[in-house]
Image 1 (cartoon, protein in one colour):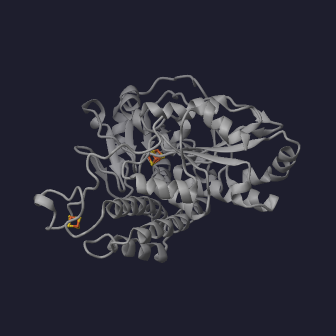
Image 2 (image 1 turned 135 degrees about the horizontal axis):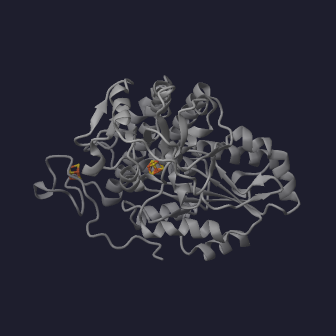
Length: 440
Ligand code: SF4
Ligand code: SF4
């Protein structure tokens, strides 16, 4: 598998000012003198900012704000304006700074979720349908889900989560609603099949929504940040049109679960097993932890993640989060003396839970986080994952395996920094990677 970016067809692309080459775009060097690596690092910073913004947005939905993060976002964006900053090293430092701010943003969002809905608890989730009218809700906004559950309670309408909404089932303040009955489908890119298959009304609450097929467009609604062409947008939280639509559709038939999913492992739940985990590690019964997760994507190379988990020896434990988990969360990995071998920590923003668990385990063993028997095997698709990657690098986490592809804006200069300074590895073959990780 290729581990270095191929020679670019163009070294950079910038068309943000009137000097732009041939009135089209600077693709070799900036007319202003901006070098390709600086242009790419500016793009990297902007992508990281997008990820942070998503986390802050959902925290704000629940009334939680962070003025330092807001200030950082405007300062960092300003640094990418024409003729402000031409210093590649400074853009690496800014990316690290952005990673730190993203940690604050993820912590804020987690605090908002826990203070509003309680700390998640392990919960089995059905994956079939219940006879009756249904609404499928996708995206990341727990606030949008809560309001929907309030308004559907007692109406006979069943609410199903999709993709990144699955972890909602673990929150006491959400699972208490009887109308929350299950989860349909897997990660974001199966929308067109799942939404076509189930004649339910649909609500998209954030990324990752897809432009709908005509067949289900008139059953779909968006709210919050999400917008789709020719799809009705709900301002505020009056879901009457969505509920009316659900009632007007035929009832869904009863469909048995093909698999049962378990979600809702919080930091407290995992750390309540801390002494047991320590004991099992010392006895050699737990050899290694893997954090395998992040974003899913339809790329063929994503098959790596299922193969990776399938091939792990039985004395290893997999923590997971984000929609990348759907690549393998149907596998029954069993447990090691009561410690589950597959632990779903939640949405992609719950990377903060994984970080806090790793920090607590490092404290327990009185070692540096990089000395833990823990390897991160991350998949990325969009810019929240970029922000999370920079958060991990800002914490000094080394040796991360990254896939499914090298980000397209990373040239050889940037990859060299990532490899030399952070020991980033690009995923190769599952068996070889496992062998290399476990030999250390
Ligand atoms: S800012 Fe520089 S690189 Fe970008 S379009 Fe203007 S001259 Fe070209
Ligand atoms: S984990 Fe990433 S790809 Fe998946 S739904 Fe969330 S933001 Fe989208």
